[in-house]
Image: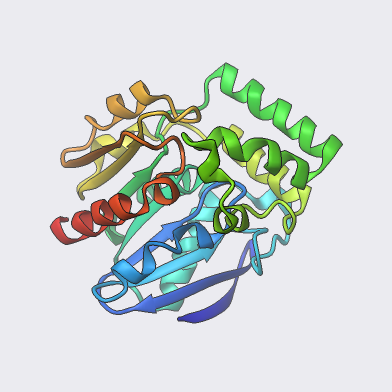
Length: 264
């Protein structure tokens, strides 16, 4: 596995790359790092080139200006990685906030897509209620810090709270290593994003939807509704997962992802 850093308009972008074959870029979600995909790489690397970036402000990825951070600009930084690796087309698959970035990438660079994946994510814009919840979270972070916020958030992301206490899973969420300003910046980017329903409606490549039956973050019915929008959809419901299917049901998730990449 190679660890690399490139310079983009947003700052330094760090990522890992491993394997051979068609490129697959896996984008982590809010308050995570790229280790959220650690279970997937051994399954996929024999047939695909796997790229796992750390988004701006995470790990060795930096933020030059928080005002420059948006869902679209983060999508452009993913394209910068593909350009640096001389990759013309790739599967772009994102978890939660990473799914928002994947949709933005699909809108900006449709000709570069081999396939698109939304893992516990949505093309719908935030509701007023959701925006209010995000703003309350920002206030909590600014008052109590990143680590306290992460510790209160993790249990709500899992169907089985005991699973969330696993040491490896705890390391995936980086509350002790991330700056509060980064979390706030990412929250503001999510609040400002627009709906990208038309991206799914116009998508010319297959789209994967991984849906957690018990997801409290992405409404189950919204996930089902959006899965009918693309011309070609692969829809999988994880009955024993909430928002973290790749960690809650890793074997099944890896099987789903590998089959999608093969069939698509």
